[in-house]
Structure formats: C-alpha cells, structure tokens
Length: 92
Image (tube, rainbow, N blue to C red; front, side, top):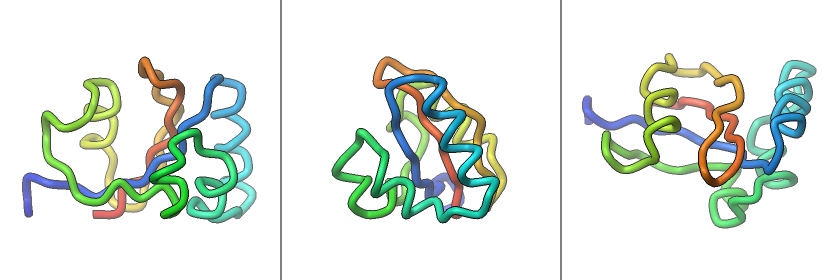
C-alpha cells in the first residue's frame, strides 16, 4: 500500500468558509464532526469526510498534489478545485 494514502476532507463552497473550518479545527473541534456538519460532499461527510485509500491519478490534480504532500496527521490549508474548497487531513 506504499503507493496509496488515506485521507478525509471537508468540502465547502467559499474560501472564507474553508478558513472558518480551519479556525474551528485549531480550537480543538474534531475533523469528522465538522465534515458531518459542513461538508458539501454528503457521501463522505456522513463518514466524517473519509475518502478511504487512493492512489495517484484518482483525484483532481490540486487535491492530489496537496494530499500526497501532507504527512500523516497533517491538515492542509484550503485547496481550490472545480468542486469548491477542500480541507484535507491525511491519515495514512
């Protein structure tokens, strides 16, 4: 599984919303709880934002580049894609 990583994400419409999510995370709120509450990706949101394991070529380029650059446990800054703004957390 060395070529695959496991991440969760929270998808919101605006950069200001993504920055607000980061602030709430910094104050100690749980990533999974915020994903369930706020994520526009309702399928993953119900699972706390869990995307499972994925390899390169499975996600849109900006998302993939950021996800693979994260270390385990790290949370990204907002990542803009055609879907909106993502906050990504790497788990494995």
